Length: 290
Image (cartoon, rainbow, N blue to C red; front, side):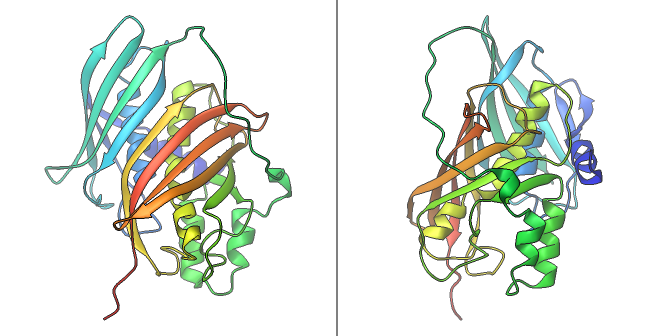
């Protein structure tokens, strides 16, 4: 296991301060606020620790209410909404400085047999043939060295490989509103299914709005031609997967309007099983000229 992944797992290992209350820390991010994937992942840890082990996460729905302060702890309060025969529901409120910064509702289910079909996996190159995140970022001469190092530090726990240039790599001309990324953690994880859900949740917030930027030829936060933040985030976990094995994140944007952009995606295992569906809307604004 890499040092960066070990550090991330430590970050996600919340301190229990009451029966249904937990405290978490933050780490540096690409932007000067708490990374949305971090607070979503920590909220899933909090919810999952109040649920029986035989019930696995099947969905989450979250809202980002305020920018998180990376210099202050985050308290996660869990509300037990339902404990039924098959399903368990939890609501988590993340609080900083006495105000809610994030809310998440999550549902868990016992295993059962049922109807089974899925959308086919799209074509994508073998991840092992693609440049690493380090190789891509250091190859872009237009990016300041400080930006490159900040990106690399923020994503060091994940082996993340774009199948084509990301928005900040080639911009200025609109492209298809479609982006593909292969990812896996930078080291093996324990067999706990919740841990793999939590890590996929963490990574899911890294690139989902890329397709919005591509549609308008924008480079994004790395080059400063847009400003934005996540507004809401939803995930559905369809089939078992491992976050330490290659997963294809196939992303597209069906719409942008009113200062907001929508991204939707499917995450597939390398052998073609649809593991997760994701939808996110974010603020995407062009900076005003003074």
